[in-house]
Image 1 (spheres, rainbow, N blue to C red):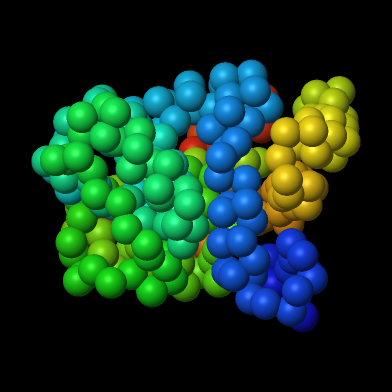
Image 2: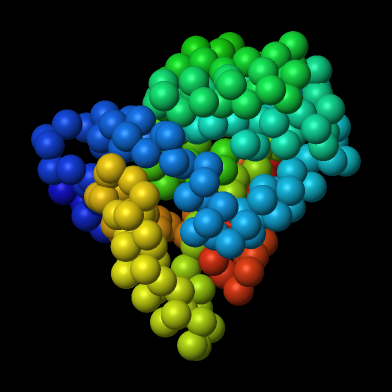
Length: 249
């Protein structure tokens, strides 16, 4: 069956016959204990700068209520609390072990009055329409089972004039960096993941899911189709990662 947004075959994790959502939940619960460490090591720390750059898109608006979708261990939520100083941040994720680790980090940072984490499905948000000034997602949209449904739900809960900021891996296009990047993600990263994580498949899935994701103009077209206004894309670090931002009318 083709992916309903990309026209490509969907990337599966374990071939269990379960939904992509269930397999993604299983994957992140499996790798949760090493997730933050592996992020820093595998990206050489660049992922921290990427998150800061993404939050720059919200500085002028100064949102007071933020929804962080696929929050994981709350890296973006914690950074947003420090940089943007909103009144409230709600982080949702389907992987409960990731959320447990995020709650420990939030407590350590003394941000429990600002950040709340809860189990939640990006494609079926429990919140009323027009509830948030901003919505953020870091490295999560390519894991949505139904990309368009998840993006539509994010638009629904965003207030008019609010902004969505999405950080996601993309594919470099410049020779020879493209070839080096592909080799690193296809061979080196899984090898490191195999040594440090009990879930080998998680790190081969990363490369495959990035290849299947409709990045760049294709993703901007999807945002426009759903109803977002003025979508823009900023490519970072020679195209390894991209920031997508758009508003609600």
